Amino acid sequence: MNKKILAALVSAVMALGMLTGCGNEIKGHEARVIDADQSSQTGNDNNSTDPNINDSITPYYDPNIEKVDSIDYLKADNMKYYFEKMVVAGDSIANGWQFYGLLPKSRSIAYGGLSTFGFTVWEYDTTGKTLGMRETLKKVNPTLLYVCLGMNDVNIRDKETFASQYLDLLKKLKTYVPDCFIVVQSITPVAKTNVYKQVNNSSVRAYNAELRKVVAEFGREDVIYFNAYNSLLDENGQLDMKYEAGDGLHINTEAYKKLLEDLSKRLNQEMAKQRIEAVEEQRKEKANQ
Image (cartoon, rainbow, N blue to C red; front, side):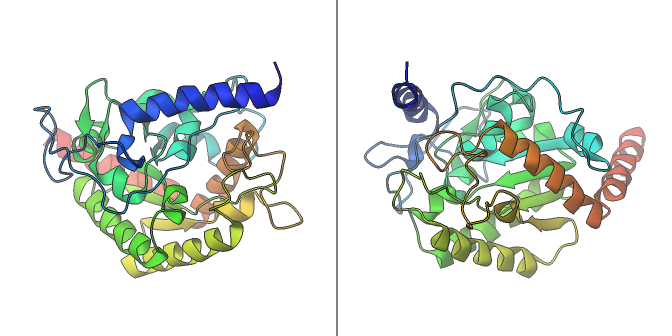
């Protein structure tokens, strides 16, 4: 079976998953979403939709790549520590951490097709129970949250709206898990083989510039920007082909390993390990009171 046929089959399967799990980002499909400021434990929803919906990017994962067995050969100070603490949140690129076996489902709050708006209102089964973003985050209670969103915003809404919605998301996250260290990942680059012509690296850079401003405006030392875009570039300023998963936009296992190394170096710059350890100690003291 050639790569094109495999890609078509995987895309079809993932598209079906999107209809049942993240249809709020698919044009022409009614969304089942909840109010992000209400608990979803009752199972109630308001069936509202995003007024800015357009066709989202179909999740794609390389069917020829095996699950990750080990990251022991990767070299970065404190990398294993961060890796064991990290919870990912976001879209299909965020979901790749779990899909390729890097992280367990219990540390993945992500679905393919979600935009920044979509992430705040969708429901997740991370905990084994379908809950909204707020309740999921409170139950998982991460000390290190890695947020990866934006690829589905580039082709849906203008960068100013994207920035405003991302800032709102960060405010919500800090309300739900106020002591959590948060990493805001930039949108990753696309390759020369990118099949989504509505997304290009010029646009991605523009949206990343807005995202960097959002983090700066938020103004917290425990919320940092991580330039994943530069980590995955080739010498021509595009997604390196050794990192693309088959459609020129999604990334493969080697890309996630590269991001993990570079992320660890970025976290070390901010003394994140010490900050996380202090939070964990405070949580223990509070629990023992």
